[in-house]
Length: 340
Image (cartoon, rainbow, N blue to C red):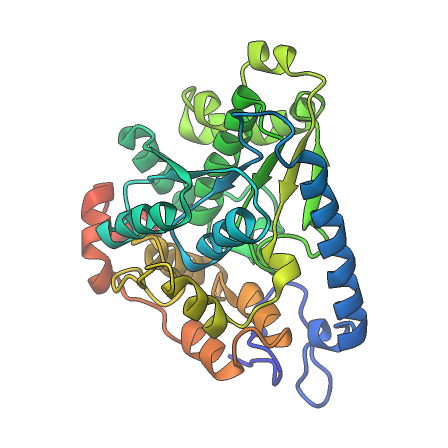
């Protein structure tokens, strides 16, 4: 497999090409450092303007709901929003059935240290189990989806995002924040203002996809009720991804969150700090599409000097084998032959 000499994108990545020096077209088109810095500063100012608009407008309510996976990036996001920006945050963790005890401990330690309210939400595992198996076996929601992660992660993240928006509407919270980094979401999406009621027609296509794959219960987990949408039809929500404005080297992120008690789990693979199912997603995605599902994300982090290329090479170079994933397969009640 041929890899870009600057990042770690392989020649199997959709739409890639290389120049004579072996540099991929994505690295060739990367904006100059000064331009990226200016754009990031604009995103930061836009985000801070939103924070200033909503901060403590109503006594006793939340300023932001944080999708708190317990991993390193969402932990830094929660720390920044609650401590540095003084937002009243509700940290919400969605337990997909594969969250290790170490991550749950991190969630409690971090939220206690920051003095933040914390909710642990567990969807019914029979639905989640079926969702994961059908995600591996089925088709992605769009051709672009396969470049940003495995189908296991995509379904899980969409369920999480929908739950956060639902909570924001139910609690009249103006911000939903996530710990997404470059390569996981579009570069300009540090702040997006949405009206969920007006977006429902757009969301319906995705919801129909999930219903056809996961059954009628999918509407419960991926949809918003007509009653809630009617009640909140004039309410806008800000979706905020602060990591797109911070651009902190990964080593500094870990150093910072360790100060409030965060400890890296030892059983979540090379590319996750919160989920034991991640490696199965990596394996099945690589077998089907021929490239690592984190290749785009890691390449973006390399270009921005958030991680060294050598570390990215290590992470994309080790594809787990099914022999290492027997616990996950057993919990999903499938064999590797069921997933091919």
